[in-house]
Image (cartoon, rainbow, N blue to C red):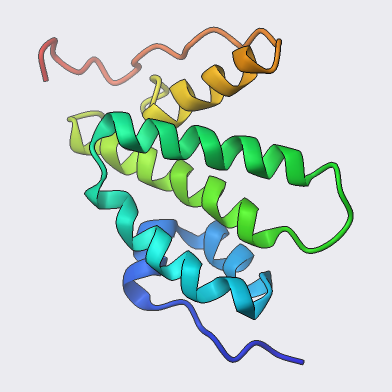
Length: 132
């Protein structure tokens, strides 16, 4: 049965195109909660956002181990990636800068918590002036 719940435009702008596909593929009973969750992302301070992102990354990775439709978990991790990039650009970095975003920091934290060694943090490639 096709979905009857479409992603609102404001949520699509927060989440990004990949997360929109994951939203479309998620079971409908998750979608109202995903909408509210995504709308809260821009309101979080950086520490809160990093914690939410780490949780979403962990849940998405864990879900990959099981059969079934876990698109709602993947939506959250992907939306956090997009929001992390948005915050990085808002801090003055170029869109294509390869430096470490809050999402990247959260991902590295989850890896360490699971006993893995994350890749070294990316360095700023846009030559953003210090203090900006």
